[in-house]
Length: 319
Image (cartoon, helix red, strand yellow):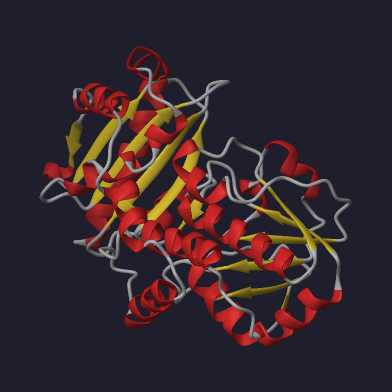
């Protein structure tokens, strides 16, 4: 992948007319916020643009997604945002693997799969990069685009609590507020509001907590049966990975969610010198040092034993 500057990206985005913006599977607030912000900006520039995610986008993000109607187009230029590797594409988005023209990302483990790209591991969220890009391009950030970017920054930083937050993160958030971002509404929606079905699901999850390495590793599980009995939706899954991370003394927090076809999707949150990304790479996944994910295709007890063992190993190595 040829590495280019934000100025060069701006020039490229002015050269084409029909854009497809790709997101990773199980999309989070940063992926959705970036995709819809870029799509909205391209449309404001007079281009045709459409987002694509192989998985269903949770209702939780509807305040941003519902403001941008789908459109039909034959993509001339493919852009990915917040996508570290093409392995994280799913569904219809897999059609574009090997065809991505431009990658904009903030993951240190980016596999450099696109023709050209810009990767800044120092950015707390990919949304930070897009804010800088739009400024470099001299394009106006509307309240709608500001909302999408603020959602990306706030969710990828745990409402500005994670260790990835920098002074630049706060400055960018403040500038987005000045552009009209509904910071109060976004933070309340994502961090202070839970549905009754989510509360029911969390109650079941808490019964599955297990500890290892003297309490430095915590494990929690979500099965398909729990989801069915609680009535939880895809939106209710957001934020559940933080539950075990909040427990005192935990350095590696594991959330394991049962999917279809024997897959268990794993989220790892870590601190104190334990790398979640390194743990998940053992199973073909990746992410950031403090937050990463992977999938294990084994029966529940085997999958649980494997991920706990790897976390214990990482914790012991950090001592």
